[in-house]
Amino acid sequence: MAENEINTLVVRKPCFGLPTGCTQCLSAYLYLKFAQLPFQLDFHLNYPDSDQIPYFEVGDYVAYNNEKGGVTECLKRDFGVVDLDIGISSLPDWISTKAMLTTWLADALAYELWVGFEGYSSSPAYTIYYSDLPWPLGKVLFWRKARWIKQKHGITNENAELKKEEIYRRASSAYGALSTWLGEQSYLFENRPSSLDATFLAHGLVVLQALPESSVLQPKLLEHGNLVRYVQQCKTELIDASPTPTYAWHTAGSSSTSSRSTSSSKTKTKTKSKPKREKTEEEKTFKRRSKYFVAAQLVAVVVFITIMTSFDDAEVGLDE
Image (cartoon, rainbow, N blue to C red; front, side, top):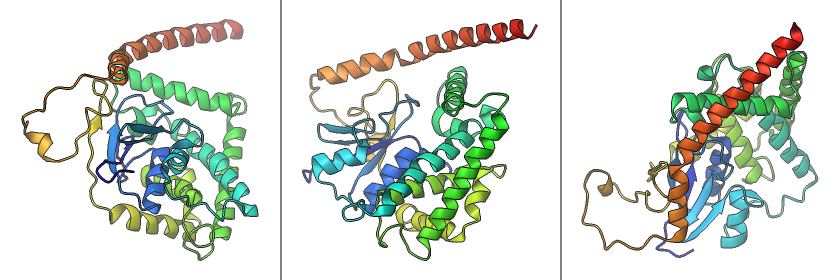
């Protein structure tokens, strides 16, 4: 990477005392911290259900999270960002540990965030993903995600309690296995950081920082003192000790390149602008798409409500 180019990680907004409340974004943030790659943060408020976020920008290059392997794999492949997994990803326990993190623990946290609380307003997920959107839009997008999670796990009114017990039982087993594996080490494998450390630490930080006292998942993690110390040490060294990042808020009417603020002098005073350059075709396309975002989502709200109303009416008819 050229020395004069700014590395920017675009994530969802900060909340709950974390640089970002999204576990995928936080995992990418921690990986880059472990890799000692300098970067600034930008926060994107729109497209809460986009699988492109987080993404990494440097110069004209953008690595999106929905590309093969995710944003960190793209950076390792295309820019030579240090591969923290060299020499340990072939170990026998690597695959099973990764499976526990990306299935049992990820599923349990997603279930708790979108299904585990009474009402959308009491869930941290609403704060993390939807609170900056218009109220009806955020509410419906939350319900749509909750409905998708229920469908993923085959949850119905009849088996809801059994599915809940199964999800949390698997999470408890995963915490126990990770606690035993970690022991007194500082990291999961060979006492050095890896992508799996970034994945678990992101999960643990959200569980400890974002979930309320009514959480079912948080007490299960708190049962394992070494895992809690592991997460807290990470927060102290990689988040609390880090300087406040330079950032800007991405909104629907701004592109990822034109909206970024790289110095505090741009926030309050308007300096003389440079000769206006011609917008690229990509920027024009982005702006066109952003203008229609709210309108398209509002249409989705109407369609969703219509379908749900029809579905509920059909259920009532069957019950009669």
